[in-house]
Amino acid sequence: MDRITLEVTESALMEDPEEAMATLNRLRALGVTLSVDDFGTGYSSLSQLRKLPVQELKIDKSFVLKLNAEPQDQLIVKSTIDMAHGLGLKVVAEGIENLETWKLLQSWGCNIGQGFYLSRPVAVADLAQTAAAIAARQQELADITLEHSS
Image 1 (cartoon, rainbow, N blue to C red):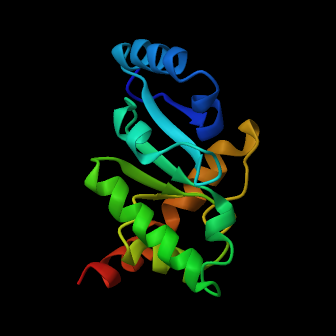
Image 2: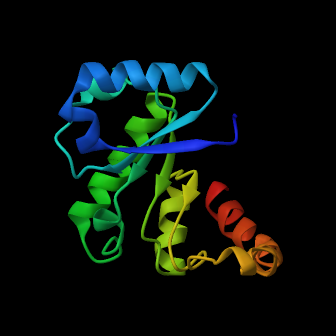
């Protein structure tokens, strides 16, 4: 079960916080990894976030898509990554469309990326071929990480 990650939107958590907390605790007890999806677009408070039994925070693509051009988005994303790490959470950034954005996120310590630059959605029939293509890019992606950790 530790390979299963369920994503829960920030707004869904706020509809009925007590019920959401009870459900998340039951799922966590089963070994499911929990992720807050679309972080930054809902109405949750930071005090609520620290109480949730989640292991991951997904930064919404609306903050990532214009990251190279919007200083305010840069501040929000970098601060969110720092805060999430301070709470012991992994960070996933959605909406990575180009190398420059991926490099910037990596330099800030973003753990995982999602977006067309890394891979487009894949049909089940094409999964093996796509996995091989991504494996062939591992060195390229690792070089980016090493470049920013030195």
